[in-house]
Length: 613
Image 1 (cartoon, rainbow, N blue to C red):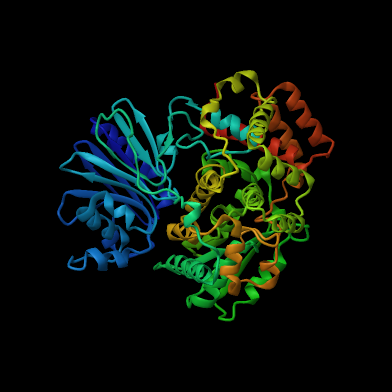
Image 2: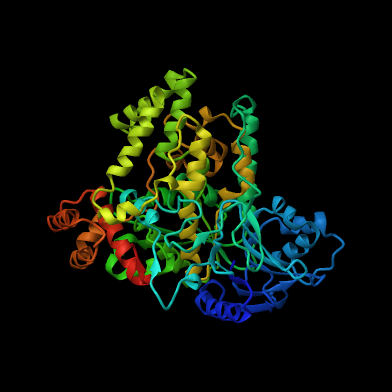
């Protein structure tokens, strides 16, 4: 896990200036070592966080044995030792880093190597003969790669700060800001970031970039597999075993490290499974980090305690934090600076607290349960897609049983029925609601939003809902905040559920099987039943790292009122309503989140010298 930056263009002086500036700005991503490579049309930077092969033989930029290719790499390839045996058994390696495996594999296979790699990555490889850079990002976009084109020059970096202007205002992407303020959605607009001139390199793609090239022509090498219904199979004992073994392999492979490891544990299904696997099958010491709002109705401590009690090996060392300590006034500015964009709610700050605890404990690698909700249809809106399939296949008893046990209320039932009987009507209503929720913003800002960038998926097709979650409204911002919070403390975050082989297996199972007895992620619970205490297995609620936002706003009321006064992108009427709700102490969750998002955008604009229109 590291930080990388690259310049491709005709002015090497610009390139040198860029990477040397990036070297300073990305030091937190790689405090252990740094290196710069320059050629006539390229400058590459690498900041190293040593995880595998802590010796100098893992130094980057690294040049291939043939001398033609030079790489800077951020990430981990969990099967790199297997790839050495399969393709490079006759090669004499200098060390045992995965970087050396990649560059020698690229020498043999070029972009075809991507199909064999299991892991996460952001890669730039300079080809001296071709005079072009090969750029790639992992299948889910766990590792960030940002791109900015300026005239004939291309700039690439692991974070946006090196790509931002330091001598003039930066311009916001109006659609991203409007969508975030109105809906809380972010990271769902494909290559669009919150900054107009900075693009995400798309996950699951690669590209060649040459000096003076006018556009980024990316090639998709992986996407979520779509299996025709007639070829999908039931979730029988064989499928259960295959899924169990796949999750086991994905988790244990990600313990590969030459440094201490830890996990975050919320008490939910997903992180509990990771903890359960490590409790049974990992012989090394594992540090466990958890944060709870003690004494609140959202306190999950009893679930955490039940998971820890299952660890008979005694290899867990537990660290706890009380979320009642959360202060927006003291912490929001810091985390906006880390994330480089506004974010959804204070739970991301809670995650940041855990990373601080891990850093204090000397941990460099943290595993977590992110990605399971997205893969196994764990959110309420995704569960609706499964209910639709059950209705369409006349499984009325199963639908009724699920709805009763999920206890999500009458509105959820009516929305599900509407999606079944008249999906086009439901889509129109969703689109109309989306626009209406923008009315608290100024007309000037609303007019700048491009509605062509926002998709409205058809819930009658589970695959579309799956794609929306993985590529749109859920996973992109999860992998971003995990990367930023971890790397701000020089910690590598790993997500075992995002082993792509798990998705390729899940895609083969009939959608009807994902929701049973009111239990979301039924496949996951059943396949990993042995790793879960009964209290966790039987949960039907979903909390995560809950953070008491309303209480935090009341605690920091004076500061919050001052920040709201600076939110000139909202109408005066909307601003007065937010102020009144805060002063009267009558906030509900939607009203509190609206205040949170408004303040977050204001802080972000001040932090990065941003203008909206």
